[in-house]
Length: 342
Image (cartoon, rainbow, N blue to C red; front, side, top):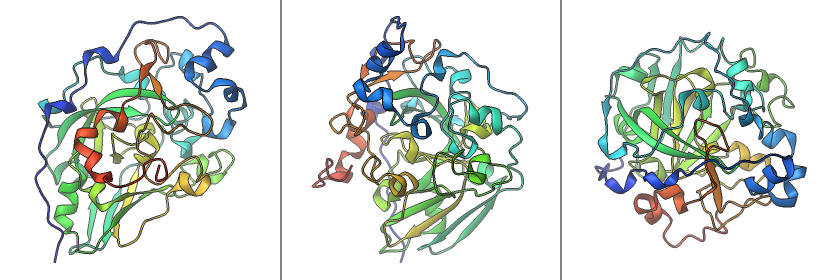
């Protein structure tokens, strides 16, 4: 017997408000920058592997163009149309955390341009009625695509507003049929050290044990917000953004939104996740955006929204509980101590 799927209710509260972007202040020295970022006195001791490139946004580097993206056909979902400025595409595609290609924010765009996405296989297996193996074309043709604009909040206290193209994870799992008794969904990134220098050398890859793995509870996975993106800004994903398919979970910190996914496994147990294995005291399994629970080395109470001028194109803004999506997801955690289960 399969898990029952319910239709999500699209709520205009998911839209993004105009007042989330504010005027540009000027920050001139490293001490003030660290203070502004919210890292305080501990900011000077930031480990190079975990937060390399934190100041890269002073650069206005253009994304490399060796990788060709193609336009996608999709329907715009008006309930997810941003009312404030989107993060410019040159920032979205040149300021990335994708440690398989290096820990600097510009390493992915520099090192991923030869990344091969054809052929590609995405396997859906585990506690499902019908295991699936999708090829590259299936990713854009098997399920009707839509565009959704979501906030992306990094655990490093910066954020973006990005128009993603894709489909809900629910729509894919519905095709496979989730068995009763399933409790979690596990995700795995491609393991290909020949293409990914961070996988060849753990020092280059930030100390992470690869392949990169992530997980959600079954109720998180089946929430209508949970999205599989195959594109951004109306075109297929560049490699530095997780080509050809990535997860987007907008109420969680960005590291939960695993990139270049090759396997989705429905399971009866909580799966291991990469950052939790590396530093469990800093990166919990849930990783919900929570301004009331600080990272051990900096505050999560506020963030900087990246705009046309980079990290300092807007004043620091308050971080919202669940990144502003509480109305849609707070019920998932009813009775759960979110300080303990962070």
